[in-house]
Length: 108
Image (cartoon, rainbow, N blue to C red; front, side, top):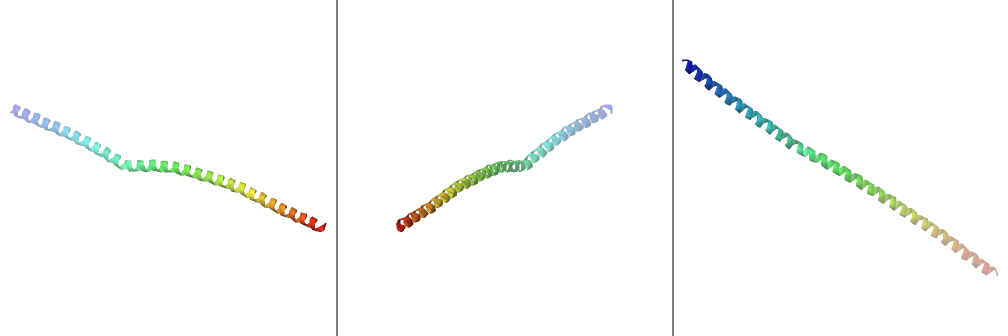
């Protein structure tokens, strides 16, 4: 009888040990699955953040280029405006001189 109780006790201990091993394996799989899921779900967010940073850098670069072009254009336009104004002034002066010369010639 003692041997039977001992055999049953060993058998129960073996079953308990196997159950503990299986529970540990199951817990490990659950942790792995949770980690995989977290990685899958955060991947798109990481991509969005990276894209947003890249787009911001591009926007700043484009804005700087645009501002530089505006300054260059304004400088060019100002230079041309001054040149046109000077030419107009010279043309008016030249016309007035010719008119004055004609008057002098006509008065002689």
